[in-house]
Length: 602
Image (cartoon, rainbow, N blue to C red; front, side, top):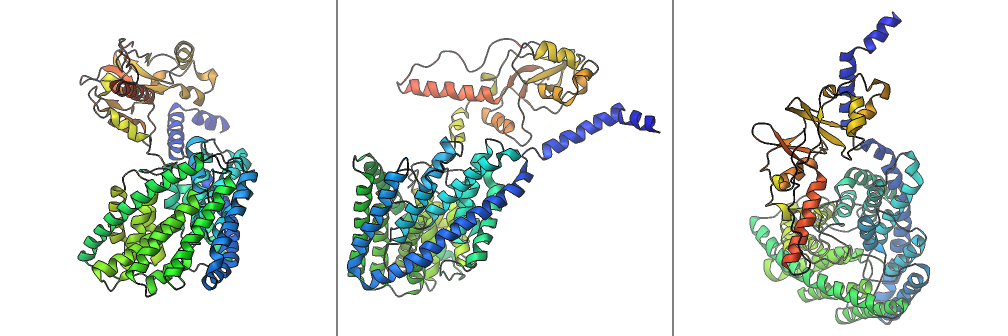
């Protein structure tokens, strides 16, 4: 009986189909997503707890009593803000390696340049500096420390958990997941946190690889904070009214206005920030001046417009006042102007936070003023929502996050279409301008330079192949010993069958290599493309879910003319860049063609 079972297990058909099942399972779980079911919740809980502490300190203990004091004692605004920013400057000057590196910008820079690594020695000083920036009344809010704190915790946890099978590339994923969790907890809006963290590294793309872990971490972080502080929305935003087709046209016009203003602010902020960074003055002096100017913005505004609306601090309470209060058009418009000026002084001087809240508050005030002047709608919250989304899209280049945020903040989806229109137009009108100096266009944009090139111009023509009747032992000894390729075309006489990878050797014990033929393990489904195929289409096939390592370039008769790999496309991109640079008189262009000219060796 035992011998029969052993013979059955060794049957060639059973071994063949067992191998196929194993290949299917490897392909199905190739991205190893199941590990994030354990790791992402750990990130979410840790970030949620830290964020809850920051929120409690600033929004419960510091800002409410200080705001009340500012409203009743206007004279205290300027000196108190100057003192708060002085403290921030001293912390950043003496307790951090680079006082100009912090908040969202540090996370984006780490994602692009440092493989997700964040130095934790300055973590606590930067969090304290963010608390003093926002808590004393800087025109910023908690998304800065939320995103930075979450990203840093995610990066740190990668170091602690890497023994359980994490790869180096996973550190960038955990960085973004932590940032998403921090944003989700700060605003009690998990979807906003998710989308913003995925959008913010790029001006025109998403950090796709972090989608699933960020989703899990955001939800867990939100529930962690909500279990401590409650799940009530942080903003008093009453939405849900309907809209007409005329409202869509007005929304488009508001998007144009917000896009232009956002573009002007983006450029001004970036230039001011660069000037401040280059100025050879002690960091704490820069911040003290910034704090005094921020305080002056608040003082002038409350001196002109008597009331409780003030364009400094985290300003969460201002949302309800703008929407529900009776404010003149001039006051609303000037609130937006003073809010932008205060933000410029607070963050342009080196204040430690970000400007998501200042941007949407500015958009809300401009949208409400727009409604009062031109539309006279009975649904002023609609135009406030469109202004919010449009200004965030134009300022941060995150149109999806802007729309999702408004949908979550209003508690419904009634404004999704108008905000989409406003955000899309503002995004387009503002062009490449962004308040972030670290955001990038996705690298794949450069590949568009090759859209006019066919694969026959870049393919390798000197191709080393293997015969199907060769044994794996012969394949291992003769082919892989003398060539650095990892995939080889397989022929049966002169007929092209497919490809075989050197990784196939790992699947069988070396003692069986002499018995198994290459033809038994050939990958017959390898992609074949014609020589006239566009390079962009070849890249799409190489980057697909199947993970093709090589494309076979064949003519209509099925004869192999060459092969194309990602390396060939990158080489072509480099040569094209050199040619373009030469055309602009920068460097001499190479005279060789993209492809190689040797014949196919089958």
